Length: 561
Image 1 (cartoon, rainbow, N blue to C red):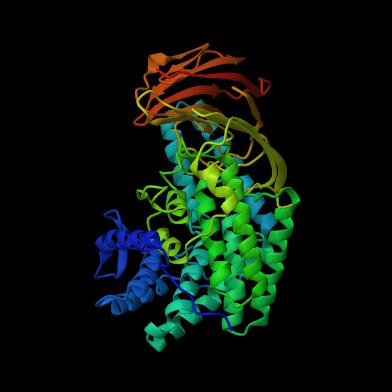
Image 2 (image 1 turned 60 degrees about the vertical axis):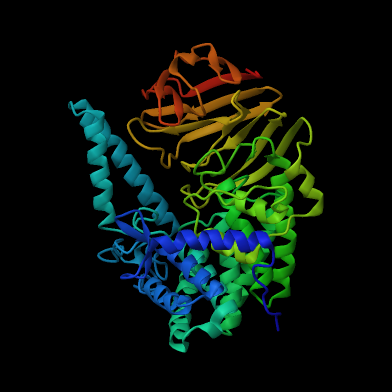
């Protein structure tokens, strides 16, 4: 029998929780009982977080509101057949359509079928775009037509991420595990029964996804997957759920021990979710093995964060296998975790971003930073070279070839840091394979990151751009290989204050606080001003016999003014 769970133990947790709930209260829609996301639709996952927060706060009317929010979320669970890839997940918004299950039902697809369908779609899009442009259509018009083709595909077959998000099973099931384990006695029994029915569907769909590997699970999802299978296996006395959860947990530990790193390596966005999931491992289940591994992996992960964190620049040094934004304050909960873990006397209260709702779980569960890691998070620990290996997950690759071993290297100094990734074949648009941060003369922090996209589009999954980069003292070597029959824009995205286009020259970038000398086999770049800074663009123009690589040597020199 597990002990009762103590919540909001520290003053920092209480303050953070109160601030988060104050912000979420403002988003509540009393008609739909969901939280607004902008003015057009509601956010289902954040609504789940809000129901948890309401029960934890337990003020006047909070229980009644929580019941209504939970029911509204349950009403947005995707049903269908168990063979459907979306079975048991939840809509991201109330306006999202249910993915089509006919005329191509789930039994028509497996992991290999999914891969070749996506590859076929990409090939069709590339050839169609080329023909459109050859017949005189502008690139903008060609991109518009390709977008319409993609939308038509989503109306015909279930397209992961575009038509539905399978990860909402794990996110919402984890939140509801917290609700049920901590606050079941505050809920109407009929609400509890409805939640239990929904969780059977959710865990069933999650296990089917894991077993088929049709849509590979990144680390943060895997950690939540282990939790919900074991927790609900115990709750429902379902041996199949429980045994699968233990099997998945064993595999997570085995994979971690290969290099002492997660596949979702050095990811500020997802390390936050990892730490929340590991705290839940320690507190929600009665499984001592899950508790033990949660304690161990939480300490391991904080140690890895400590090795790459720069307290003066307030960021993890790159490279990042996945990150939505480069500066971690913009799309992560790590500042909140540092605030709770280190204490208000050492870490200022965090600002909020689009991950606002997740702070409910974080503030309730808390985190434990190992004593040996605290100093590296509080004070600069000296200049250092860091090198780590990990096995990446290539989300959209052939299921028989969905990983490769990468080497991450970083050089960290007091006023700047650089990081790079070697061996990556990752298709994700969130990949940041070369990253730099530096202190600007006005005391702010600037950054630069290497990215890629098709011209005229936002960064998206690109299967055939490979990176072999390495960072050492004051220098990053970059080699990019294009195995793609399409044009690509490789670009350095710079964010910071005082960035102007004339600072970018062929031979280097003279930026506030940083001079970067550039040696490359490429012609002069295109320079574009953005709302955040600059883009330095090196276009790759595909031809059947053209050169397929770009090479750069960047030398960094920090300057006080």
